[in-house]
Image (cartoon, rainbow, N blue to C red; front, side):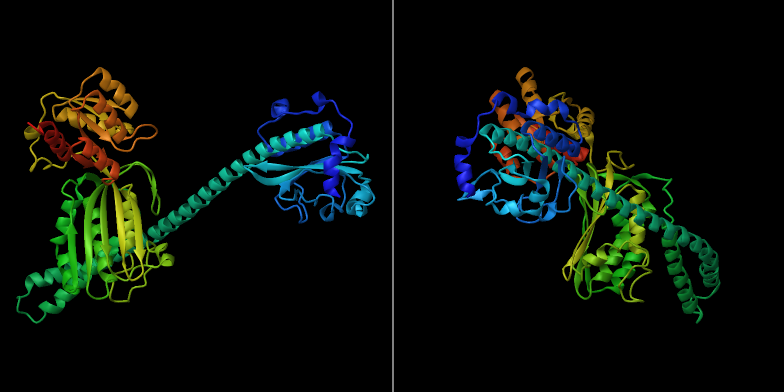
Length: 575
């Protein structure tokens, strides 16, 4: 029956004034504001004023066969019959095609017996699907108390209003997604704030206890030491008094951990190198005792010779190294390996650890083991004081990782932990790097041997800070530096000014990357020399650039020494 009505619709209907009925999105755009919900109500009001009828309604959702929920309406009477009404459940798909559900309601139609139809005296209705990206997301309906067949102009008008509704729905969906993201970000920040407040409270309590313990421990540490100085080394009292002294020192270490939890800011900082700190720890009595207690564990040291420096407290960083290595050793049940590694890391896209790690240069300390690993449930709590699942008496105080967390926070650093049960755990600590030098920075590297002769060098990098660093390094090394922020600007520069060497960042957004820039540079000067500086590993595009003639590849963040050697080698290649 519905198919017949659709087929004969145009023949039985009287033509209407197209100019009055046809509506385009631009015709009502001046009525719409920034509130999508209000805009939808305005669209329904305009729909009812053009089509004329009892009420207009918009029903979201793809399945009209279920009880519809009202999104918004215009002039809808207050009635309880609406949710169960058959009127708005007409099928839109017939014979594999999508139609408008419209008709004059006759006594023979099943809808004629509907309670809503009878109570409101509805004699006709028209509905058009609201479609977004080829998917039906709702339906726009208009009803009337006068028997009528709707014209083609009516259909066109309804379709245009449905299209405008679809645009508003898209905007509304986008706004809701943004709100959802912001709510999640707020929840995450709230969770981090609660964690920080809890750590701070525990630290205050621990600090108060620590001060009292220090007074008690003074006697346990100082008096045994004085007694040992007065005793003969062969005295039978020497061994038990030495044991008391060593026990006092261990207790003092725990107290020092408690004091670290007070989270006092580090007032005395200096330029440090993680390699030097690790070297000092590995030659300390503390590490020798650890190796003695765990004879089946191999400790592997992998320092990066070009490691950037950091600013901080040497005693605090030493404590971090000691606690991480001790924690790793205790995680290995039998034979195993603990690796202590350092390397530089340049982050140009923020990454997530326990906190979001912003862009920048970092000196990274990695301590990993092949032990029992940490479950995903426990990994969220490992930095809480006294939270431990290790065997009592076999491990420390339960404060080791809390000390690590607090020390890294005090150095504006970040922690990334990865673990897999029965395969091991890796702690990566990101410390903001500095180009400041330690006192013996140039002991093994003589700048004079790698100085240039006023050769021109063009640095192409989309990060302003990286351009500044490279520019200062080039000045120290005796080169004439130029900098641009994109591949397009580099090509324009090269067309006007010949350059001895290009220093290319590999990934630049938006626009040309390092490989595309080098290809264009070769068109200008087929013998153009270049080196590649990138924060990523040597990718396929880097290899392709090297095949085209780019020479040295250096990984960000680079040291002055690495930079100087790469430039000198490239400029003298072929001489």
